[in-house]
Length: 193
Image (cartoon, rainbow, N blue to C red; front, side, top):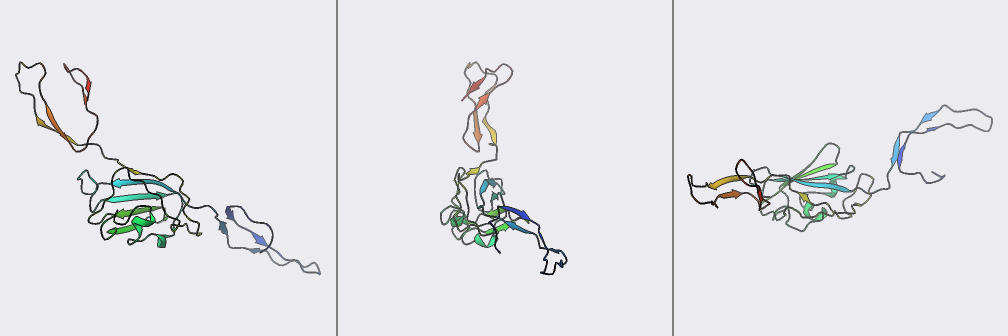
């Protein structure tokens, strides 16, 4: 105790005492310690389509990645939706089905329960109740949104009748999500719809 304030960082110090007669003690190695005065930040939020339904649903997982270890007791199945900056019921009507952390306490996996209401593009701004191991409150500045990492799944519904004399034939396809359509191929003109 005493002296000046230490900056954020890791410290490994030694101490030696000299008495009034000039006798030096042995050198004592202090247990290394870390000063952390910066709050954690939520870097990314991603969704994993566990049931391959191509939509966010019960049993799917949402993965929250922080820049440093989080005090796991600050996020539970009962408070995960609220403490991560969502609204009550986002992860299921009775809350998240389960949560789990990686060994480093930087990646939280939330398994969605029945009635989950979150959607692609939802933003998450953790509350101050979410802290790092030193007790610093969340310092996320820009709330990350759920990233959709799934490509649309398309299939042919109605093929072009062949042979046909129609110069503008009709073709029907289905897609698991809305998006831009691009048509290319031999003899086809390039079109984007």
